[in-house]
Amino acid sequence: MRKHILFFTALIACFTASQVAFAADRLRDPTRPYSPQRPAVGTPSSFVVTAVFVSSRRNVAIVNGKRVSVGDRINGAAVVAIHDDHVRLDLNGRKITARLLHGAIRK
Image (cartoon, rainbow, N blue to C red; front, side, top):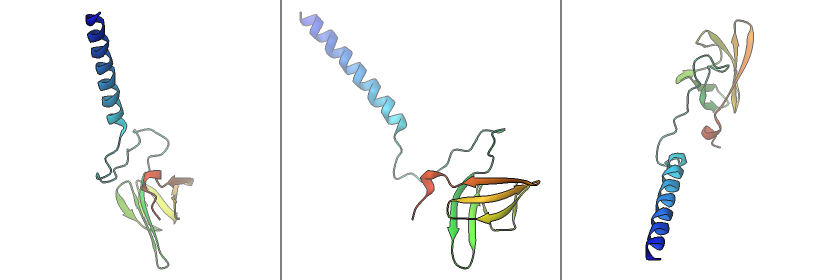
């Protein structure tokens, strides 16, 4: 009987340890700077907006790690407009809307 109790205690300890390790992989460290995941090459959206600064004088966005304003070009696309939560781009006549990543929105 004692062997059974010892076995089940060890089994429960292993299961608990594996669940804690699995959960730790999904937790984000709140003290770590925000770092967006880049889309894989060939995905529909190759424009990643990580920050948008809107003021009465000018609008600036960080797209693919570079600061852009209306009229600038990035990766062959022209920046048409910068809004609170997205950037409008024109890539060879094709209109693209690149949205600000949800984790980056602060008000």
